[in-house]
Image (cartoon, rainbow, N blue to C red; front, side, top):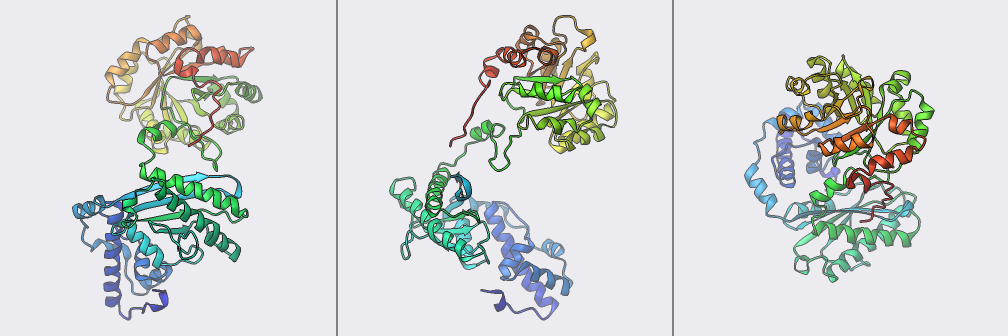
Length: 485
């Protein structure tokens, strides 16, 4: 039904009743799709009414009706019945990116029962057309759709006939053929072809030209997405393993997290930017390396030096060693704005400062590090905090170096005392391979090394010496990883 078929309400009461009914239907549909009670939305309610959301906004204003207040008058939807309904229907999701260049194919799809939420989405898509995103049935050739029936929905606005011919040609045929072949090859269960439908969202670059590649890539992407949907891919284990190793092809860089110690943290304390960049450029490739932008470097250049260093190390985890003693929130913000992945406060700071520091870092999604340099009782200091840090550094200052790792006895004490917390323990202060080995054997997650690397005549060799201390760190040295699914 088009918007021209909808008669505008004449009175406020008429509009309120019409609105309430549409909101109820939309809330019900959202609840079914999500498996839990949901509130209606402006866009969804406008869709139920078959009008543009701008029209609904105009009517709300004209009849002086508050959408949010109106939604509060709706009953809370079932929760248990809605969840039951959602759970008894098949609802599978698949995704795949295949190919390269302008002809690259990206497929998102839903597979599910005709009488379930996927079937509702299928019917709604086929009956609610949108300019530039017209849904269409996949067909192998005109008059020959595959089974299960598949609905294509273009992600990118189709602006001209040339683009429409691609969607209604090679893409339509590729998706349909992939579905048919998946059934024939046993990827898709034959006993479900009459019961299930597929909703397939397709990406076609506006500058895509090569019809053969477009067909080739969309066929492969659809088939792969179907396999993944039916296999419930990916597993949580796969997600957890790859989430910090993966690089999004459009974004072009990784954003690592500290998820599988041990790590080697290299302290860049040399207060000379070009020399520091040269040191960084000589580091071997490894997922186990963290870069610490040292306090002298930050004091000389400010926190903007973090962005400067990303020019030569865009994929590495950066720690801003601010050694914050006051205004914890402000200093976290300074580091965060320059893309630091973690920021360091001094354990000697007041409890109030540390609480504000940790809270702000975790609110912004970066790591809060507390350096226990010169703190006589680290455990007792941490027990006074409301907010617990992500990393604790047991640190001997350069002027206190004695030739052996200091504070290692605190590692197990920290583990015992805060066994319900999730945190990493780093050890710093004149670390060389022998003391690093001792720290790792005592349970350190991170070894922080400065001069042994930064003042070495062979930076790469010095780093390799340290990475060779454990099999885990050794395995990622100079790792050349090609992600193939």
